[in-house]
Length: 476
Image (cartoon, rainbow, N blue to C red; front, side, top):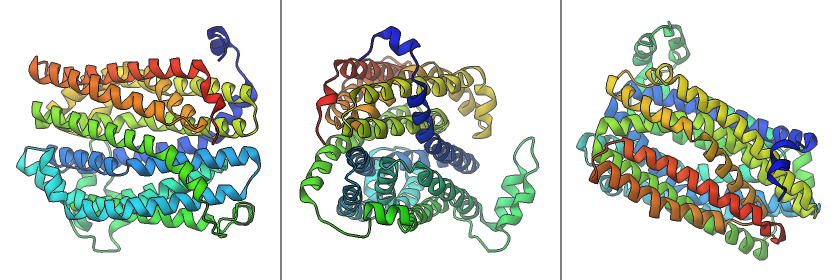
């Protein structure tokens, strides 16, 4: 890699434009997802702290099941971008087919088992009987949607890998609007939604109730939130599929000419398995983190869920830059242009630091304006204010670690980042959180200091690995 001076001050404007050009549509789609998640949280928050804690734990468990979907996205994107650079375009379509076959093989059993055994799984992670009951209602439905989300991840990897990130933006924005619309109607019902909108402090939003007046939406509470997520995931998969009919995609990449390529499928599995295992271990680790915080108190758990949802406003935009970085690294390695691949990483880090650093400042300075949007519980707001400020200070480390995770994955090295994060979470982050939060009695402060240690250590280790430069020699 270049010297520190070159990394800090020598900007490559052309590649910087390429990063933001590819990343901006993903940023918009991720921001829409984040904003819609915040809207979901605000709606669920109206049901009380127990509902917040229940949907938060349910979402974490769902993402545990979706771990291999995220890994299949990376594997599909890595192979597609490398073949794009090599100008072997039909194999990009083959990577898509392989991803969907693997997604079906993994996703269908996971969806059915999650639905069937939700009432057995949830009590392992929650103690409060009311929260357990609500979480089972929510999770048993959203688990069914994992198969559609799995397909959506594979589509995202394909379209991002061939540098068509605007498609991802269009699909995600529409699906998120569908999710929020159905969420409001199903959670509160046609009559209840007007009352909920009227209760928003400082704004008269009751007129928005007319959007739900045409159909008698049932009032379903957290079960309605789960159903809305399921239907929005189904629509997302359908919407992605419709874009395959565009002539520029159908003809160039041969997406409807099915070819079973076992060698490529094995390659994609080799890329996906380490990252899928990592995602599952890491998300499961955060489920345990939620368990630790829940042992401290239900209010602390609700505040933690609110803060993590808010953090997506910084995490998801930077993830968009990371996905752009992965595509460019894969493409330039396919073209055998190592300098451009390296410069893509540097420019991506620069953009991630700008985005996450700016949002981090907002978290530190204005938490008392942000948190009341999602909860009117004074204790949730008080605890969340401290946690959000702590999170704001670690945005720089998170930006570096996340970007390098995508960069190494785009180069075809999914094993090292996977092993590193899994070890940091289970050997450092969780023991520290339990020891300080429970054993030493620091309360919620201990686990949140643990979050900062996790992000910083991960960024340092991946920086060392990237500077070694052995990722340039990987064949995909």
